[in-house]
Image 1 (spheres, rainbow, N blue to C red):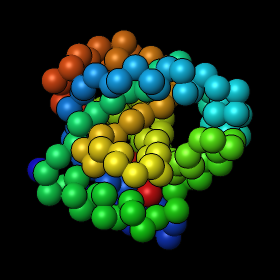
Image 2: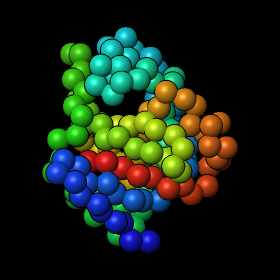
Image 3: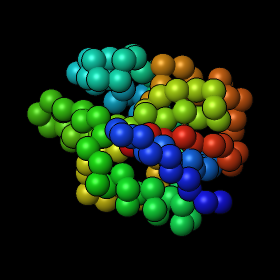
Amino acid sequence: MAASASTTERATALQLQGEVCAGQGEGAGFVQLPWVRREFAAKLGFEPYPGTFNLRMAGADWDAARERIAHEPGIPITPEPGFCPARCFRVVLDGRVTGAAVLPEVPGYPGDKLEIVSAVPVRRTLGVADGDRIAVHLVC
């Protein structure tokens, strides 16, 4: 499936597909940290649901999207000491759920992982399970 890009003066929208997958269970603790909640509320405009929604990304479309994202500033998340910085990009999942992709700036972070935060429980809201494929509209 080809990634399409529609460009405005400020943003490029990437149309991708991802496969729902289980995370490592660390997202819930992370998004509940007070400084993380403050950063997300101030910079993304919402308080995150406790947990992240994980997608496995693959193929030429994802490779091209990663290359594009690597050159974009995104929405920076400034960490407290002892934590890593991250960049976020706004997303719409299956045309129904808004949120942000969080890209931690840590060595060894899996290149096929896209971790999403949202104000709602994404799995329950979309009615999806591991292995389901969903559309990802990512703005960078």
